[in-house]
Image (tube, rainbow, N blue to C red; front, side, top):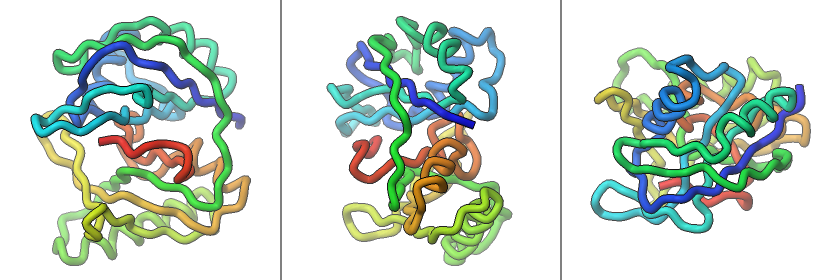
Length: 212
């Protein structure tokens, strides 16, 4: 299956820093009449400039990205173009959509990957998390190596997503040793859960700024 990526420029000033679920909810309410997105459609969280008040400021690099099968592109392009989303009181308009192909890379990163894990000792969480990453790669028939990423302080990139008041914990992930076909497959299929909320979205390390 061939996939394309639609990139929407944004007209607006700010977004909550934790906005993955909120953007999905706004799309669902505004253009889908409360219906869910198809499972094969992926949304990416929006990059911006972090602020201390739990927000990010939008800049020229701030875009909403949607990946979908090529045969669905025209539908989502028309449906979302010029739409105004109310993201917890922050208004953004989706404008000037552009189409591009996902670009293969031997190394891909995801800012946040989550899995539904049983309650375990938090000291063992990285072990079980990496096990889940490897199982996900095996399911996609991808031969590559998964790593938990680190943050700027050198600590494990442990991050969380808030959904209806509940904090979902995951990690930043790096996948290395990908061939061209598997790199494109991982970008199109994603990894883990909550892929409508910006989780499991992989990108070439040179291709995108980290979202806040």
